[in-house]
Length: 272
View (cartoon, one colour):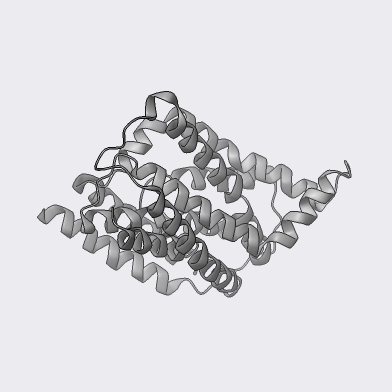
């Protein structure tokens, strides 16, 4: 992987992580188009996800500080309730990550069969988005059951091409959760999941068996650094923009985009 390729992938990750069009799906498509097959590609993707998670923390830092401060009051309030709901939402992704780790990693490899799957999941993301724009705005509150269901959609979004933000936002709106609460919850709930996944990737990378002479296909430290920086910067921009879009429920164009890109990915995969 060259520095330029790392920058391109970092930009793609930063923009697509928060827009409801699947960052993993776009990284998959870009990797196939650029012919990138790396033995440490999953580590590189994890570093990019860490960067976009940092951008969420920056955008929502006031909320995060308030939540942490209220937790140490050891009193039941709105923020401790939110923390509990976030923990509930993590359960499906936690089980999926532990039980299906190797299968998920296999699906995230940049191969032609997985490109076809990615295209199909992008189309499914488009369906979710299209349906969410036709759901009457609700005024409901989050509860543990709704948080768990939204968490199931987050776990399903481990499939490349199925948008995490698109799936969870659509699920939350379909469950009647109010838009502002939906926005806050779906962006905050992803932080511990991505951080946990990234730490697992780093642990595997740093294990003695993984340490040795780097091969020609390994990702270098410069690529990791520039990928992280570009992903973080563009993630800040996209996260701020997406927060505004969700509150206005203007997601139709993203649904159309997912339909088009998904169809193109399937056609490309079938032609190879």
